[in-house]
Length: 146
Ligand code: HEC
Image 1 (cartoon, rainbow, N blue to C red):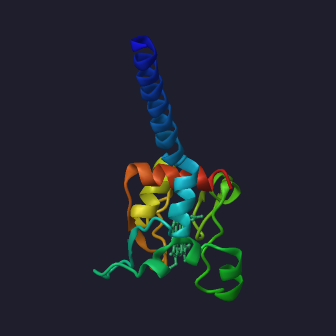
Image 2 (image 1 turned 180 degrees about the horizontal axis):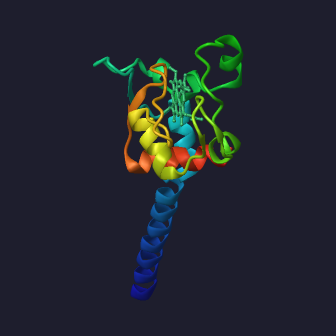
């Protein structure tokens, strides 16, 4: 009788542990998905226009507000390049400068400082972002998987 009682307690503890582990692993978001959330503005970043002290409103500061095909067609002179594996990794001349391509390190530097891999400064229309290594790594993983 006592044995059955102990066995049921052990079984309960075991099931609770399994449930807990499942819940924890289900709530963990992959790096790529986090990058997508950052790109779409579901996780917000502080972005500022160079020379301004205030942060952009979240709606405007998200990457997808400017870096889309549709947006490219609408605003020609303020064109934001579409960001994906091809545009970032394929070497080509950017902003009239020499040929360059991105890697994670210079991508994060550009997003933070507005200075591209060939030390050409991006136009002010591209905000400068306060972004952690982990957040930037996630964005890079997402964009180079697109
Ligand atoms: C308000 C509009 C706007 C938002 C929001 C924006 N960008 Fe940009 N971005 C631009 C424009 C415009 C350029 C082109 C600048 C130039 O060529 O001088 C650009 C250029 C870039 C470049 C350089 C691409 C290349 O080929 O050299 C990168 C990288 C970039 N943006 C990343 C991002 C990321 C990541 C986000 C979100 C965290 C973001 N941008 C949000 C407007 C924006």
